[in-house]
Amino acid sequence: MICSKCQKETAGPNFCGHCGTALWEKCPECGQMELIDRKFCNKEREKFWKDWSEAGSEKRLKKFARIVFYYYAAAGTLFIFLLFNKYSINFIATCNLLAILLILFLFLGRYFVFKKEKKIFFEKYPHYEKFRNHC
Image (cartoon, rainbow, N blue to C red; front, top):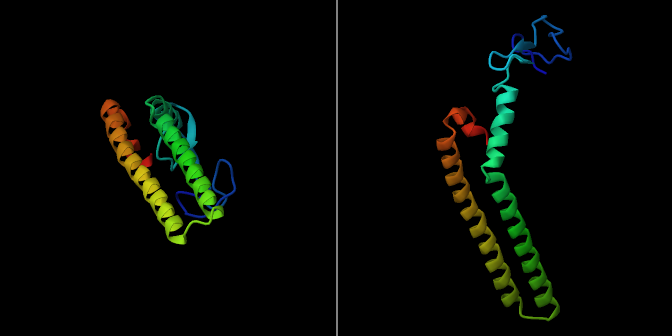
């Protein structure tokens, strides 16, 4: 842990071993003891992630990852099939290029959908605006 006053590494759990500065303070938002240099209240961050998950972004992202995985597995199976059936190398390269382009298209599409979902989430929950750059 880095001391906020002297900027030295300290192993002390409550106070800096170099300058004696307290490393914990009472959170003005929730009343619990938290690190002095924290950016967000732990309770508020937990509530944010709960609301974020319930909004469905995380579920849709996992579903998208599964789709990409199955597609990639199918493309790999196709590649092995083509390789063992001795198709021309140009045909195999073309199939691989198409598979890579499709995966890239899927990821770009998901990126833009995620940006839209993020915008909708922060419009619905404006009090979480300070978390916008951390998710």
